[in-house]
Image 1 (cartoon, one colour):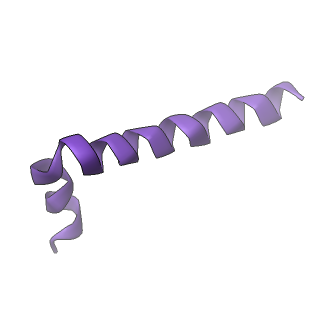
Image 2 (cartoon, helix red, strand yellow; image 1 turned 90 degrees about the horizontal axis):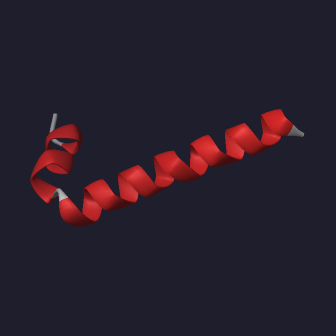
Length: 35
């Protein structure tokens, strides 16, 4: 299904973004976790 592919692509992209943010942008990601 095309919809399933789009959802999978979105989830993969979001996971990759979060993973990269945690690895390469610790200062910026720490802002989100600090409340």
